[in-house]
Image 1 (tube, helix red, strand yellow):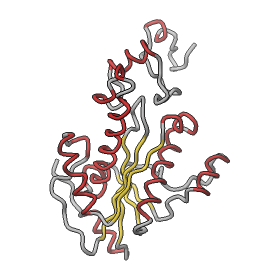
Image 2 (tube, rainbow, N blue to C red):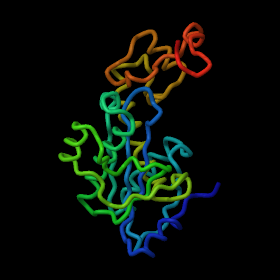
Image 3 (cartoon, rainbow, N blue to C red):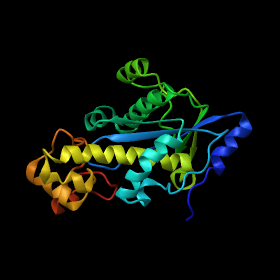
Image 4 (cartoon, rainbow, N blue to C red):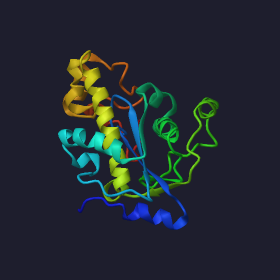
Length: 238
């Protein structure tokens, strides 16, 4: 697959948009740590391609570290927002993604308000949820959500430079957070696995119990043979 380009982002100028934000998340599938959302705003009237940018999963840690400050200089605004494991447990993953995205959005919008947002995937989890819980409504009031039109695109992180750049910023910042947390909790090896579900991570959880940074509503340890045998043909537990 070739490098991402600005081809799709440039189509927004046909609709009168100048400032377009690429947005992506990292940490969705981890067992520990936050979900993190990056936003990178570009000015379509002057932006040029940025060499080396790829979806963060396709880059080595050293290459991501090199690219992060280049992306920050390339963009007219950028930010990363986080929602903690406790928030994920409290309101669920999608609402937590919205919180993290809202925090990134607010920071970026202090510099420039995007005319449109390009979001990786096929589901708009960034726009405010109008049928949310009271707690979510209170959060939206204190942290105004994205009020620009949001456009989703499958594999935008692979094809669109702004979205790939957002994924790099989010990955670098989240990885640094997990490395900092690894010191007090060396048995979880967060400096290596970044909170994801490796076998050694699950084994450590089984041996030491979950920490305050684990998503306690998730299945943190692997099922035993006895547990698997209780699942009936419909997939429900007996």
